[in-house]
Image (cartoon, rainbow, N blue to C red; front, side, top):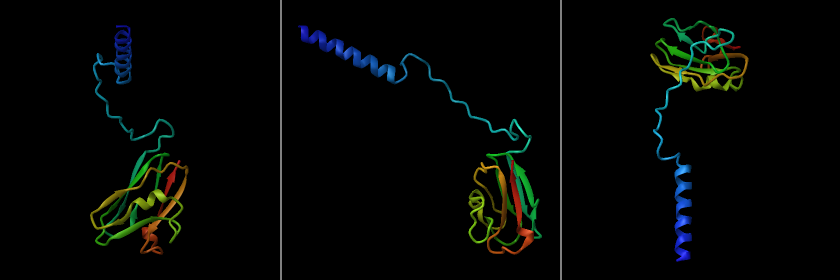
Length: 142
């Protein structure tokens, strides 16, 4: 008899621990909310996103943008030719590797950089046309 009492107590302790570990059992689950991303951060007023367009004339516009740390830049290719957008310097592309995520853009395609977290200035160019100044520019992260 004594052994069955102890087994019942042990089972009750295990059950209580399981309920506590699983968050209770009697509480109502809450619906998670989707975080919102501000278009401008609280300090500095710099946008967290920017867009650079390769126009029909085959040049980037604007050639320089400024974003806040953590921001991203979208490249849009409105030219009739494909372009392979990469970070400076050519051919290493090591200055701002986040730009390399844009890569090869076919006509009409767009792609966004990774998060630009480090305060600095990043140069970019078309890997296949590194000397074409119309396809060069900079992204300032500040």
